[in-house]
Image: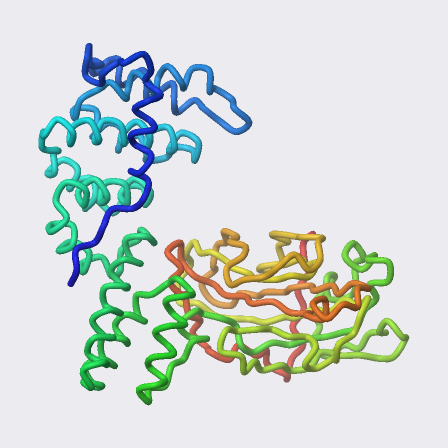
Length: 402
C-alpha cells in the first residue's frame, strides 16, 4: 500500500509563521506550561461572530512560540473545543511542527500516537494527530491506516476504506475477481461516505455481486402515505392537518379537492431510499403529504435521524416534533440534516410532512425525501423488522406533540 500523505492544512504553516511578525522566531523565550494553559483557556473562550478573538490572537502567538511540549496539551484542548477554537489550535500546531521540522528535531511520536489511538478523543483532534505522524514518519502512518476501517473518526475511516478500494481495484485489474469481491465487500462494510459507497457498489455489481444499499444505509423502505392536503399560498406548512393530531391508519379525510383520501402502502425500490410522493400521487403542486412508519429496536440508545429533502418539511419521532424547515428547492443530498434522537426499546414511530409549492420549473417537481437512522459515525441502526408496516387489524392512534 502506498504511503498516505498528510492533509493540506500544513500548506499554510509558513504563512502562519509570517504572522508572528518582526522576525520573531518560535521558541525564542518559549512559553512555559503555565503560559500554554492560559493561552489554551483564552482560545477556548472564543465563540461565534468574533467573540473572544481579541484575547485569542495574543494567546495563539504565545502558543506558536512554544516547543513540542505544547503539542500534547493543545491536542487535548481539541476535545470539546468549538470549531473556532479548533482552528486556532490547529494553526498553532502547524507553526510549532513546521519549526521543529525546519530545525531537524524529531516530533514526540509516542505522545502524539497515544492521543491518536485513544478513540475517545475528538475525531478532528485525532485526524490532526495522524497528520502530524504522517508528516514526521509517513511509513508508520501508512501502517496505521489499515487498522482504522471501523474508526469513529470519519476521515481516518475514509482513508482506510480508500486503501482497501485500491487493493481491490488492483486485484480486479489482475483478473482476480473473487479476491477483489471479498475486499470490496469488506470496504463496503466500513464505508460511510456516499461517494465511496457508490464506487464500491458499482464495482461489486460489475463483478456479479448483489448489494443491499438500503440496508447498508439504514433507509426506511416501507411507509404508509397520505395526500393531497392543501398548500395553496404555502399555507400548508403551518396548517395542522389530521395526521398531525393523531395517527389513525383506518381513517378517511377530505383532500385538497374535497375528495375522501386514506392511508396507503408505499414500498420503496430506490437503492438510495428515495421516498417519492410523486409515485403514488402524481406530480402535484401546492399540496401537502405525509408519510408514516414504525420500527422496533431491541434496546434503547441515542441515535441520529438523518434526512435529505428539498421541500418544506416537518418531522416527528415518537410523537415529538423534532425539526421543521420551511424552504423549497434549495438542493438535496443524503444526510443533509442530522438530528439527535433517543430510540426506545420496542416500537418507535416516525412521521414526516412534505409540502410542495407552486413553482412549475422542471427542477421543482421533486416531492421527496431520504430518511435513515444511524449512530454518530453514520453506521446504520437496523430495526428488528425490515418491513415495519403497521398492522392493519387495529388502527394505531397516537397523539402527536407539537
